[in-house]
Length: 222
Length: 222
Image (cartoon, rainbow over all chains, first blue to last red; front, side, top):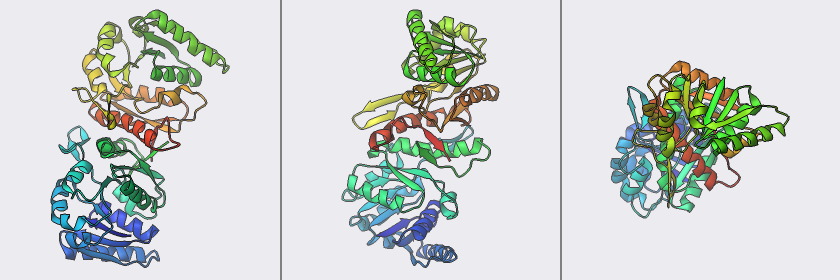
């Protein structure tokens, strides 16, 4: 499968690229607003994987070029860039099997980090509203620590929750998630449940902040 | 420690009473709006524990009588009864060490179960606003399956999150939580984080609903 990771130069994009590069056998392309930056990062990920004996080619392109021809497009951009990014690449999304949204809206104030959803209810629903109607949107990978994901030596043993209204698209994302060793994909129902899924992200940061010895947290449902 | 479980005839109250009765050595008193109902349930819990070789006395009283003299008061009532219950027992709360709020606001609609916080932001903050200023309020036990808690044979291996602005009170609740085998108490910061903690409750129901083989879910941070 050809996977484009838009915003793939950021931390969650890096984690997904390295994990898919390490554990699976997909065509990976990193997207960024600047093709040169995407190329530099793609080379860095290749080098990191090569140092672990993994010979893989990772392309780097401008976001729209990265999205073109991809089967799965991951929107690994901050919530406030989601709409712009989708609009900038919309014509390249129509042939994709799925658009994947991992971002969660958060705000830090004097009391800590809190859920801060957009008016659409959640970032995943914001993406679904902005994306072409032809392409299904699935929310996933919200509740992962980017740093832990990018450290291939770090064991996961955690869950990722999938939300979406298209069962076939959710199944594809479930398989992509479980390509990553130690990551279990759980179905969290339709897009309407994305708000609760995205609320878990600030809670992970809060729990890590307040408990010695816990950091880069994920969660296991049991 | 003398623990009053107001609304202790309901499912989460039952689970806490049985677990504390089984694993710890506290004075337990069940509160209900009707003393006779509290007494009947308290007897039933005693019988259940006795069948497992645990000889414990559990009292049953009307809520205000239950709260009187208790060191810790658990408000195991539905969110829409929280304010009424606190007001009805307010004068008995002033000498308690802590009031514990385990309820989460939820609403079911055609898309599933969703977080439905009161205007205070969370049920825990609603309780904190209604309780006498002298007594600290700690949110805890939100993310537990009542059925699993009440089944003493069911292993837990899960976490409960504590929120509160009084560190001493939070420490007391952490000890009470960890009296229960298999339950780990984690600090989730101040009352302002209660909304995210309470949002996890509907998510547990959603994940259980959508995944075969998962039910009565809790969560482990790792």
